[in-house]
Image 1 (cartoon, rainbow, N blue to C red):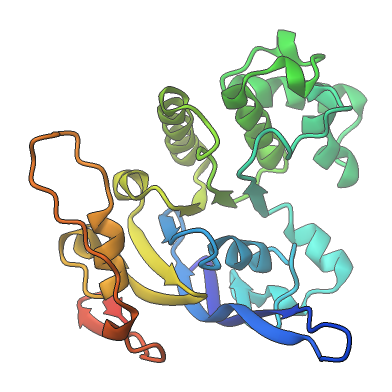
Image 2: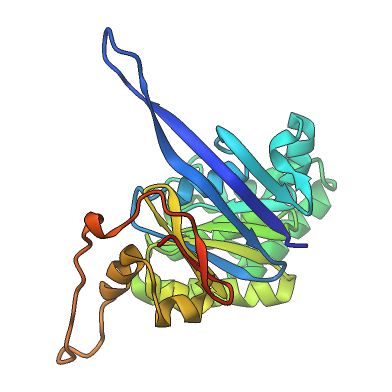
Length: 292
């Protein structure tokens, strides 16, 4: 059984209609289904506005979905009571995109990492302090920095604090929402290597949300491509990158920068007329699906 199963997930937001007009529902996530096996890194890619972050937030009920199912170890997360959902959050955590706005500037690093332990009433003060110091070491920071405020850390260090906070409750599933897009390229590699090391060490399962396709190719076992709220292609990363089937996937992959300036480039411009908007995913090769 997969660790996480998302089935026919829909999230609609209502666009303001004006003074005498009713609001218009807009589907940010439209009939999305996928599953994630224990221990894998599953990539969810697409340009800004494709619905990938909303999908991740609906899975943890940070945003309430309009309809659909999200199952974690077979249990329907969307049917959980408030109390049961709080318990489930010990197993399911998220690392946010922006390390500058996701940390409370008025709290010291120690308080930020300790907060989940206090909320879930885990341990006494001494054991919590020891756990926070251990988490700081785990993400490559010095416990000597625990009493600093977020503004005293670099962007990469702040993202490590956010990661330490997410790992405080020993989760088995972590959603990484563009975890390195706000960081310098040199720091990105360090944070990605840390995430991969922690996955091995702590037996974590990742949903990696990104728009940087080179990163996804490097670290994800399988990938799903989102376009306008729908998954248009999904399969093993090597298969999707080697033989993209959907016009949007081809256009997306053609935009990846090539290190050799003399190499011939063929940028594909997406023509919406070449796509069947309501096409269902069908299997092209083993495990590789496309909406064509």
